[in-house]
Image (cartoon, rainbow, N blue to C red; front, side, top):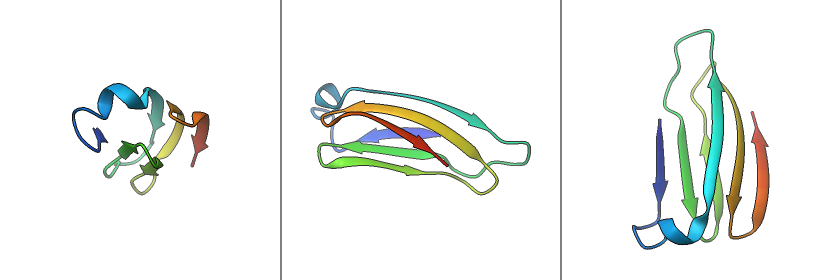
Length: 64
């Protein structure tokens, strides 16, 4: 599981991300990419992800 920002300087401008992953089976990669242009969440197969991302555009809830 990784959280990445566009670059080190952007990391201070983006905000925070809180997330939970529940998976009864093996989980693939869970990647949250944060940048100034938006938020992208990629969840591995058989994983359930509930995420609240607070960034430049305010709070967003992402559920898959």
